Length: 286
Length: 309
Image 1: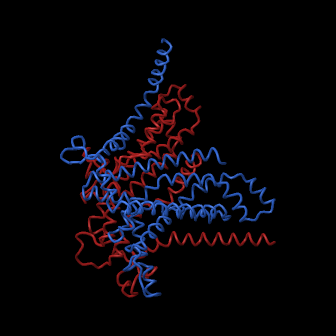
Image 2: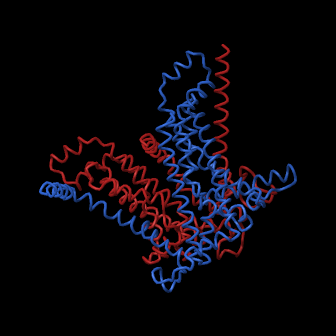
């Protein structure tokens, strides 16, 4: 039974590594939450931050939400997430469906037109000028429109739609359905898993949006959550909050981090399954 | 002549029959035109002395035409930016792929399905967190004043390490946080490829007396070799992108020497200091090299797939 023993050793090794990895992935998150909940008196008593809080209070969160920067930016982030996801998903579907039809004339031209933008781009400054000339600077639109489409997502959606059997289209056409109806009543219901995947990709991107905001937005009132949280972390203070600092900056920083990640962590268990399915379908095809 | 005409008519009629497809395409095509193709034209300001008041068309051409490229090439930033971009990108490539492949092997070999699923779920999660959040986590663990590791170092060795603000440590933090964020996500594609391995291969190898490690070495890894090389080539094609967002969020003035990449420099010089033409020239330089690299990578991927194995 020598081989049996070696086998068991390997199993044990694998389990050990996996458990260590779990700790590596979860510990930083738990530590951040724990710091954000640790009352200042406890920090002083222990001469630093400890791994788990011995007492819990929500002082840091109260302080954060007393300033209007966090609630306001939270609202902005919600708006650009919902709006941006709807715009992006709609545009993606409208592009992917015709591209998935082999009978589309000029199909390879349209595909090249899309793919070329993955290979080459004009760069940051010229893009900035376009957004500026459209008058989008300092508006929520600048965070939803210029980054609305991703060529990769269009190609992913297109390959999902190509997998729908041709017979379904033919029978629909024989029944007299026009292309619009084929899309809305046949293709879309069949593509719900891929729609969810793409939609969630866009939603996560929008919630985490940072780059477009620092590029196109100078009005601090329009900053989304990520930018505000980054400012809090690096500047180590919130504007108009100099009075009565009862909460140490690290606690406050971590509370801000928790607030900005909470929605993702809260929905993650529910969306994870769809991501997996969608990604696997996509990667196996490609 | 008549036949040609009729085939053209035929073509037109087919387009007419599927006209709604073209209407569907319109918004997307317009979007790509406005936000991707117009900026390509706008990149011409790299060859001009751009003047905000005059706009792109009326600004005078730079004399000589490569003026802004030359000034970048002669500036001390040139080697620094280029080497930072390449180094950070290469490190990320190396330390991004190898751990992901190993992790995929471990997951594939894990016989406890429940544990496997849990580990997968947990390991994908960081991918969905923003760099701001990850920077916050780095602060909590590594900050010099009150980070957890520095607390430990202080009590154990009586010294502190400025992980986030020293040139020796900053890149390691960049790479480590990158690994942490994308280890699980990067493993997905390899795992998918492994799940497609023909089980009879394992069967045959086992009959030949191969142990578990030998199965991994002689069956699992060779089976995904094509994918590994393909991924390597594709990633080499994007070597000019070292990750703007991560670096912009995490860096500070103290580590510019080792952290400043082309993208962050273009952002600072272009949008913050408004040196539009120089920044555009540098951006264009990067885009062109990127394009060449991607084309080479794709060509290699194609040729290699067809010829060697």
